[in-house]
Length: 139
Image (tube, rainbow, N blue to C red; front, side, top):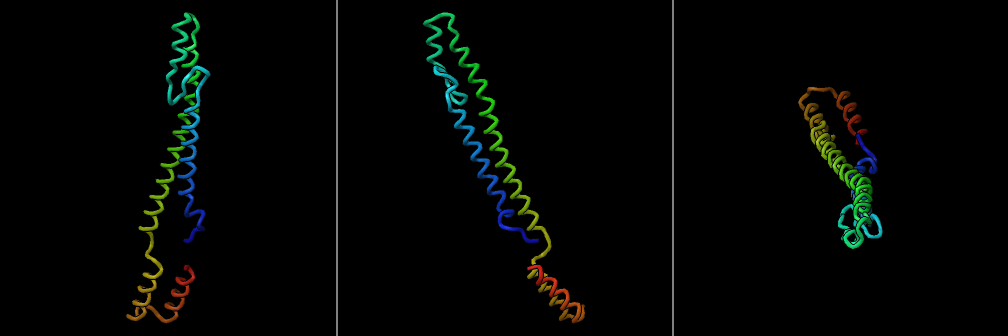
């Protein structure tokens, strides 16, 4: 069973896309949630906290932290999605390695076995030629 190169290398593309999605999540997570606010990945909003201390009742820090919490959902979703894509690609690669390593013997090994059986007289010349042609067609 032969696969085209894109199918065989699909897991590589999935890893690349997974890392790209995670990086986008990190970039989104580093964006400030407001003018005096931190970001989902760096949530300190000292400027808003200082403003609240200087102007009682301004509630700037509370607003910042609500904005940060709202922005955290897409950030962590993108990062997690990217990591899941990478893990799926690794699983696909491991499964394909295991499938091909435990599958039927190689065509060369089958040809050797066929020649051995023919030399020992276990199969006829017609059977040998037919099976050899079948095996060579698989290449």
